Length: 218
Image (cartoon, rainbow, N blue to C red; front, top):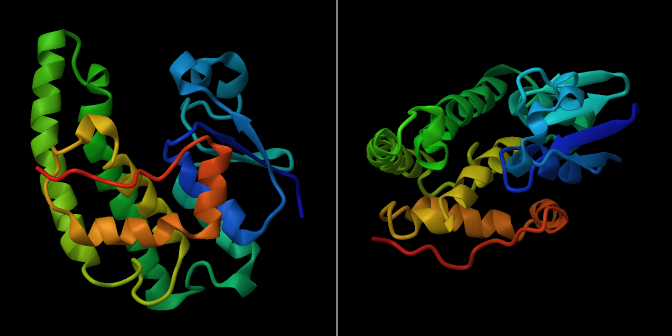
């Protein structure tokens, strides 16, 4: 097996790939890319990921970026663990979840967490955040309905899709969103189930994070 090194930032979407490496039982190293200090824009890191984002996974002398690609690579590295369906409709359903999480759910948080990327003035940023909060509530309500009472995204069997979803459930419990998102009973129950999973617990501990015990509902 080639040497693996994960470039990550604590609590960012790279947590999904971090927990996946733990779930797979692969040997790996980590390197912090501190987004609060703009390390992602450094010349050294942009040689690894010109998009200046995390995660990035170094595989020998190659670099793989984007969570979806990294999660697929990890799953295929340990096929015996069945971390993703191997082929057919099951694999397509997994990629449907990946696309939803990456292209819709992740993006919905951006106006709240980073309004400065969407507007220049303070007043405009406030408008972006306010409008974004309405959209985020709607998106998470639909996501809660989509998950339903199923224990995992793909039904009764755990997959790496669940680690990706867990990131956004964790984000929904950030203090700045306290009492702002309304009732999300299925997502909250899902988060509680995943939070005790050894891979999640290990990745959270390594990143200096804890699973918030309570999410207040408006």
